[in-house]
Amino acid sequence: MKILVTGGTGYIGSHTVVELQQEGFEVIIIDNLSNSQAEIADQIARITGIKPVLEIIDLTDKEKTSAFFKKHNDLSGIIHFAAYKAVGESVEQPLKYYTNNLCSLLNVLEGMKENGIENFVFSSSCTVYGQPDVLPVSENAPVKPAESPYGNTKQVSEEILTDTVNVSKLKAIALRYFNPIGAHESAEIGELPQGVPNNLVPYITQTAKGIRDYLRVWGNDYDTPDGTAIRDYIHVVDLAKAHVVAVKRMIEDKMKSNFEVFNLGTGTGYSVLDVIRAFEKTAGIKLNYRIMDRRPGDIVKVWADPAFSNKELGWKAEQGLEEMMASAWKWEQAYREKFKD
Ligand code: UFG
Image 1 (cartoon, rainbow, N blue to C red):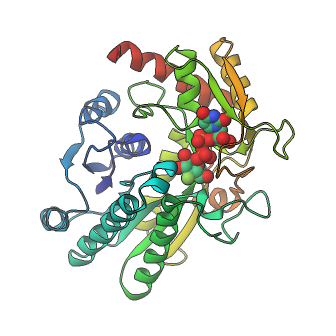
Image 2 (cartoon, helix red, strand yellow):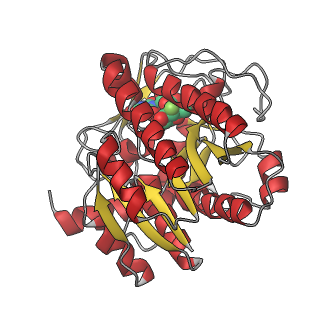
């Protein structure tokens, strides 16, 4: 069975391609390489022994997208990762985010409709919950006004899917990710932030590697046990596996409705200082960090109630925080060794 993975050379996409191939799926990747490299396809092959087909297409190009679907009208499903994802940049450049994230979704959905392709898995985010009133946050928690254009593209995309499944044969599953971190155990693939990382874990590993002077901890005066903000960090490989489960659920006709939503988290919240300590323990390194003012727009605390995903998908995140940090550190070292920048 053939699965299209858009954004398949990106961070979560590449890990998902590996899991799909290891489950026997044939994978085609579409990526415009705006935040990844074509060589990732070779790195995937080093893990699985199979180099996925990579089509370099910008999905906002309607004609090229449509031509792709005409050529590949035998797809069993699509996992749609391709999107911009930097929260801060989306505030600076909202049109860039709306155009890219929404036009690409619309073009893919049109291509599916024209060619009778029905199964669609969408990369959503826990950002749709904003700062939830009740913790842990379940799928029934209200969607809060988006904090950023990026977050809004996720909300609007879910609405587009809701409206479309009502009037077509489309079946869609939106997976709301909490905070994916870590890397494949082979250290062949991992997170490759361009320039200065925004996210916590790449910043930690780059600091430990000496690329950054010190980690800035954004605030320690929040209403949390140690004053730093709390997130639900999930290993990217656990997250990737959930996509395979979602695809199979659709193909095997196990969906309870034509649009389903699942939280992908572990159910455990960790503070920024917890993450630093876990890193220091697994890497055996003292991390240089400083407490700074709060980062504007940060959520204080959010973690998932994964009960519904665990039960309905028969999936559970398995790896703990120290395993996540160990794999992130292994990847950072292997990557720097390979590319020596
Ligand atoms: N943090 C630091 N220092 C840093 C980076 C992060 O202290 O250098 C802190 C943040 O303040 C936050 C925590 O570490 O408390 C996690 O921050 P990340 O930037 O790694 O992740 P966010 O939770 O802010 O954002 C992530 C994704 C977004 C998504 C959001 C949904 O990056 O794409 O989760 O909640 F929208």
